[in-house]
Image (cartoon, rainbow, N blue to C red; front, side):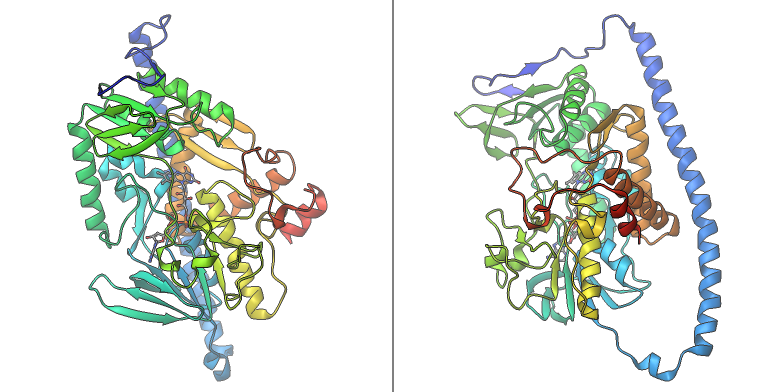
Length: 505
Ligand SMILES: Cc1cc2nc3c(=O)[nH]c(=O)nc-3n(C[C@H](O)[C@H](O)[C@H](O)COP(=O)(O)OP(=O)(O)OC[C@H]3O[C@@H](n4cnc5c(N)ncnc54)[C@H](O)[C@@H]3O)c2cc1C
């Protein structure tokens, strides 16, 4: 790191800085053993899951063949003529694909995305150092039980969406119901795909270019101190131990939105490998090779990665839903996840539209995570069904998890063989987190491709996490800095057996 003017207060550990009591030979042997055991454990679990997947596929295809023969005999011609409500789902990622899986058997579902593949965002930081890993993190978007339209949504109206295809053609898709899961973007390219990467070959090229650029760098500066900044710093240090890595954050700790133990464990890991951590340093502007702090200090590096949050991808909503966007341009929602006015009342004319995931501003003020996006989708899809059947709608998050606060589940990886995993207040670090993250990654990619083992794993995982959260491991109370409690949370939290039974039912 070249420092153009005076450094802000910060810390820089000597590099390398392994514990003095441990001779390097012992440490390196231990580290090799640990890496080997993480890889072997993951390999074994993934092989077992693959075998179960093949077995489930065989059973399912057999039962489907039998069922279709049976249906062919019993279904009357009037059944075949019944038209099903059309549902458009925008966004082929966590929230959109959850909704697509839940609704495709009963409705005429059209999935719309500007790319034709799913990419597992929580794993993409590895691609900066190992672009070939993309094949493990991605897969084609499903089209077996639904239609798939590849195009960028440019406008949303109460009964149709307008989109532009990669060839520049414009089209409209009418709908009975719309589920908006268009998510967020990210300043550090190419973390989130853009419409210029509509297929996997173009996306692979972007990652190869990003990896080649990093491979040439001798210093890296990461603006931000959240989980993404930490994970990126860890990937760089793990792959290129001699590269100088600096993190600049306005906070007084890393990962300040998560339990304090996560920030402490990740800071220790990074400092041990020589990262320079600068706290209480507010960034004013970011350039490709420098960052200017409030107060005028300029820090330079070969590459600067801005990791200071994920702004919502709400551009298509700016026309017709502009007054329903909050000050951060997220879509305001009612507890039933329909577009809301500033005072929280449902926006008139938009009752057949539901929002979910990173594009939404949730009344509960929860963390914008993949898991949260899926819980939103759970309630949005259920409310779409209820609306079509004329039944009362459910509130978020009770409709998804059976109580007033959803579980906080996340995993911060520290390179491929280490990390921190947390469930509500419980925090575990080390190899167990690395194995967990790899298994979550594999099963989520499988679930998004509608492979039975992935779908079953996450059905069981979601049910188990909701049950644990309602009983033995409730989520911590909201932090003082979190937004005011919304309508969905006003009732007193209840964690009792009745809730669990009602939710299971
Ligand atoms: C680097 C990184 C690491 C993360 N790690 C974790 C983690 O470990 N655990 C965790 O739970 N969360 C993690 N998150 C957060 C998580 O990835 C997001 O919360 C989650 O992806 C949100 O899902 P979503 O469905 O709302 O939208 P997104 O994942 O943002 O997907 C939106 C989809 O909509 C499509 N789209 C957007 N605009 C349009 C348009 N106009 N027209 C057509 N299609 C459009 C996009 O192509 C995309 O497929 C991480 C995020 C980042 C950036």
